[in-house]
Image (cartoon, rainbow, N blue to C red; front, side, top):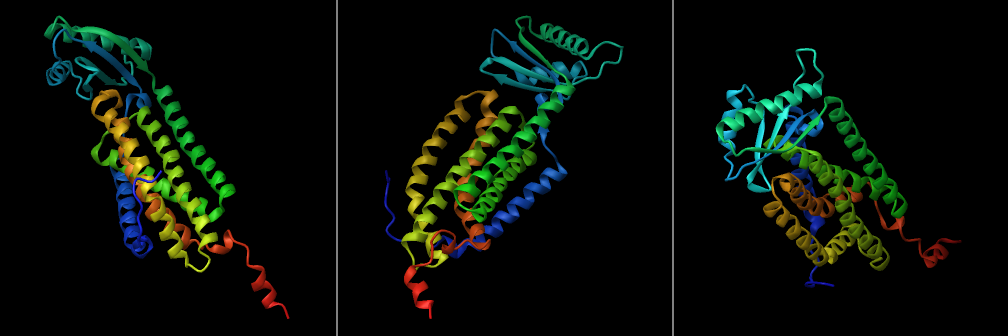
Length: 317
C-alpha cells in the first residue's frame, strides 16, 4: 500500500555528510551529558520504597512534599497516579542505623510517612506499599545492561546472515546512536530512568532495526535492477521508494504512542516519552545514518550481484 508515490528520486546521499555531522554532534552531546550528569535512576534500580496513597478529594502533590519535608524527607518523588486522587510516593533507600533489617527500616519509614499525611488530611489511605532492596536494584541494573548487550549481538548476527557484515555494522551503529541519544535526553532533563523506560529502549532497538532492514532490502533489490546506477543513486532510489511506507507505519505507531503519552497516566509517561524520541530518531538514523555508513564501509553492487557472464567471456583470451 502506498499513501502517495514520489515520482522524482530525492538526493538524500548528496546531503549525507551534513546529516552525519549533525548526528555526530548530537551523539557527542548525549555522551557528554551522560558522563557529567548521569541518569536519574528510579527506585527499581537504586532500591527504596514505593507507596500508593489515595485521597477522597484531589491530591495536592506540593502540599504532600511539604509534609514530607517537615519529616526530614527531601529526596522524594511525589506524583499523581491514575486519577487526580491517587498519589505515588517514592522514598529513597535508607540504611538501618539501629540494628534492624532493611525491610523493617523501610516499613517503619512508610508508617512514619502515613502518620504525617494523616495529620494533614485524615482521608489519606495507603493502598499499596512495595520495598525494593539495594541488592535487587543492582541485579535489575545488571540484567538490564545484559539484555541490551544481547539484543545488540543478536541484531548483528541476524543482519550479517541476512545481508552481509557492512550492513550489520552500519545498522548496529545507527541503532546505538538512537539509544545513546534517548539516554542523553533522559540525562539532560533528568527524567526518571525506570524499568518501563528500559523496556522502551529495547523496543526501539527492534523497531529501528526493522526500518533499516526495509531500506536495505530495497537497496539489495535496486542493486540487481539498476545495474548502471552508482551506489549513491541506488541508495537514493531505495530510500525514496520506502518513504510512503515509512510515513504510514511510523505515523500510525506514533499516534498510538502519543495516546499513551497523554492519556496513559504517570506510570507510562516516561515509557511513551522514550518511545516518541526513539521513533523519531529511529526513522532518521535508518535513512540518513545507516545507509551512508554502509556506503563508507564499502558496500557495493558486487556484494549482491554476481558479475555478468558476457563480461567474464570478454575478459578471456
